[in-house]
Image 1 (cartoon, rainbow, N blue to C red):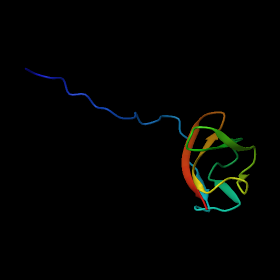
Image 2 (cartoon, rainbow, N blue to C red; image 1 turned 180 degrees about the horizontal axis):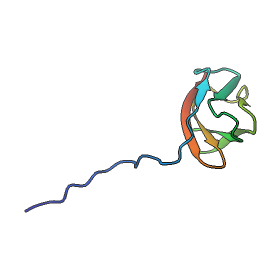
Image 3 (cartoon, helix red, strand yellow; image 1 turned 135 degrees about the vertical axis):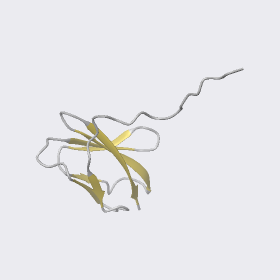
Image 4 (cartoon, rainbow, N blue to C red; image 1 turned 180 degrees about the vertical axis):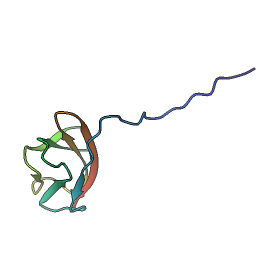
Amino acid sequence: VKLPITTVGFKEAVNTVQFSVYPNPANNTVYVSGLGAAEATIEVIDMNGKVVATSGSRSVNIAQLPASIYIIKVNTDKATGFKTFVKE
């Protein structure tokens, strides 16, 4: 019996935003760099998938959030990117 070989996983994203998040871990504010002049919206997402903070600038106030691991989502007009960071 021959079984087909299949791959399970994620396809490499074609249109992803390359950016950096700092500091990581963070306490009060996280900053996004590496976007150049691109207009961007930033969302902070908790581990339950809920958007807990948003920003239209290159920084997000996270002081009110409890200590945890979060996902930062950056949307530009051409692409979307994701990174994780730790809130202490």
